[in-house]
Image (cartoon, rainbow, N blue to C red; front, top):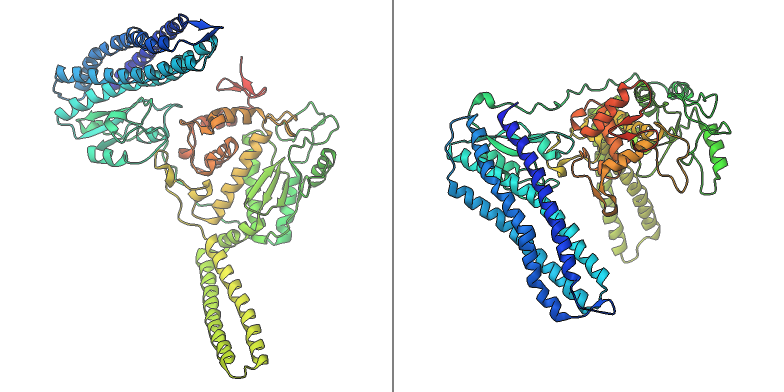
Length: 626
């Protein structure tokens, strides 16, 4: 194992030890302060003596000094050996100078002062809490609970993070000082690359940069960033990475992570007539209407049924209203299965759909779910939708895209330019009409018939101009922009809104969106037990697992800081996060996929049947395995 890896592993272990020792000292402090509050004079079981509350500050200070800062001092004394080990490790990579012991002492003193500041801050908080409890006549029990809340939760949380970050920052400072004094000009970003690694750090692990490059990169923003001083704080709070100097060109190696994959542009299928496309799509949908023989059976390629032999229904069927009953919904789902309702869809859109259903058939086999069984038109903001195996397609959005796929960007842009020129000419004629209208109005006796004709002509040409402009805008908007080049670790603001923007052509964007919706089918159907749906729908087992991964604290809306969100839309909720990653995983962009989800999909593909247990999660019961 590399010398720096050995050193960093030992440092991580020492950080764990320090956190445990400090946690134990804070438990002692918490109990000691609770005992102190127990000495407060009481009146009817309540605190009342303000003089005692004021004087208690001195005893609180003494408790913090003896139980908290004494342990901190012991912890920081371990830093002497850390400095020695760091110098030994760096010596394996080049000729280095020794660090002055006075510098080490100054770093230790600065670290201790940081803990002193935290102690002083919480001394003020605890003293104020004791005084306010006395002032308001709080009960003894409530007063003790309030103090325990401050010490046992707030102070413990901040101190635990500080004891980790202080050790790492001390090591980074020693590394950097020795490196600079030894003439280093390049540094390699070193540390772990696992499920806890920030997306920012993951991008830079094992890469070599000059000092100027490091300073420029660290001006960006990312989740968990604490400072722009790369050499002091690395990736931010609780970061386990640091820069190690590079003295030898042989040490310059690029990150050995997932490479950006070469994407083959999707081949546009031969265009079918609308009638032929509908017939072909229908034949493929019908393959997914075969039912299990019994409600207890659930082949991976078939949708489950209930006691009555009808399909499980979780979402509203096509054309359902708020008055549709569950029984009616079940009947509608039965009737619509194996059919396409192609209202508004062009032959070009239907041809792309027909081709995409061949890909989803392969995905269905890989991920042990049935294929799509119904296709319907949708409108509004959604470009596509999915529920109960029913794919919704928005013709208004996809028809222009499909046209580009078959006719090409240049042809569509020429048509748009022609419409734009037509609109410009009409606008010029409208200006002339307005001049003529005003001239007629200025006459001593305006001719009413002439004014009426001019107004009518203006109205007609204005409608034509607006229609031409709308057509030009629609065509231009459908032309894909260049593919987004964001990579994991780049500035989050540079991510695209959706995964389809990683592709620069309409046919791939259509296919990506189909994959996204099929990702929804997977989390809706894989290990579905039939109880999902209704007012108390808690989701399928896989959806519960995804929810646990997605949120750090759902009550506050805080997403997990260690997860990869490859698009802005992937931050919407755990289902969209999965669908965006699923589309990229199966679309040749695994380099953008969250590692945890990539591992989950690898497991789903490799298994002969449905998931049972993965990552300690029971995918049959929807809970952690016991």
